[in-house]
Amino acid sequence: MSALLNVSDLVIEYHGTQVVRAVDEVSLSIEPGEVLALVGESGCGKSSLARAVVGMEKPRSGSVTYRGATVPLLGVRRRDKQFTSIQMVFQDPNSSLNPRVRVGQQISEGITTALARGEAGSVPEEWLERVGLSTTMVGRYPYELSGGQRQRVAIARALAARPDLLVADEPISALDASSQASVADMMRRLALDAGAGLLFISHDLAIVRLIADRTVVMYRGKIVESGVSERIWNDPVHPYTQALLSAIPEPDGKGILPAAPAAEAPVEWRSELRSALDRT
Ligand SMILES: Nc1ncnc2c1ncn2[C@@H]1O[C@H](COP(=O)(O)OP(=O)(O)OP(=O)(O)O)[C@@H](O)[C@H]1O
Image 1: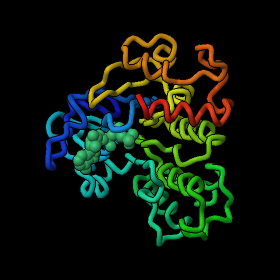
Image 2: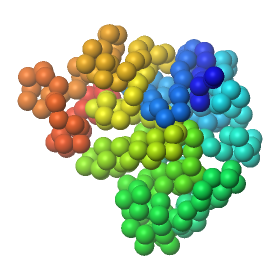
Image 3: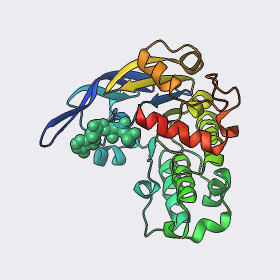
Image 4: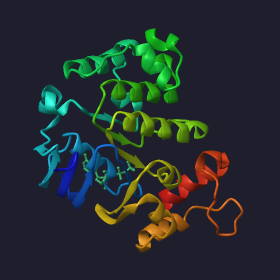
């Protein structure tokens, strides 16, 4: 039986003043009910890969298949019922939401997508509650929300469509540090309760360790290491993964990774972690 998502020898190139090979012969797969994390420094090709998975980039070569069928480019994918169970959450919630449409209606669009596939419906208020927002937000426009609230609405909208595959590109970086781990965990639970696969892209190895079954490490467009998240965290094999992990500053400065979950780490430590990863 084929995996839920299969990416095989994928190459994504941008042809501008010079050719940029953003994704270089990458292969990965996701099974139903699995969380796969994609980590790596800024510019290593994570978003290009995510966009290709949802049909927003045309592969130069290689393939992206969903339940055995090639994922078509976006316009077709949105109309084709067999692919509307792929949903994406972007790093910037403004890319996911329509600024001129009220929150409730945007979530309703997700619900309509689910209903069209014969999935159970719901009401927008229920999804707002599930992502930790007040139901009073249903009548607001995106500009009347904070960045973090907008991102929660974007997540609610994607989940309301009852995806079987959720692609989340840095979905928590717009959130305040104290709620990043809880929202990541919520996405994991909501996706897995439905037996969906989750491709979770993040800089934050500490959060990835908490929520992902497997982790794929990308460097300059290539996968340099992949495996069970806990193994990657405790026993990284590739020098780049080792460098990523050793770049995480220790709270006590003694070179021992913190045992406490990332959400409990001090805010300064978490922001240092992010900038250290950006510098690698
Ligand atoms: N539309 C584009 N045209 C030309 N080059 C691009 C385009 N989009 C991305 N790139 C280049 O492709 C490479 C990979 O970019 P990508 O956005 O996939 O990386 P990323 O790992 O998601 O980075 P970040 O974590 O900063 O979002 C980078 O060198 C980037 O400059």
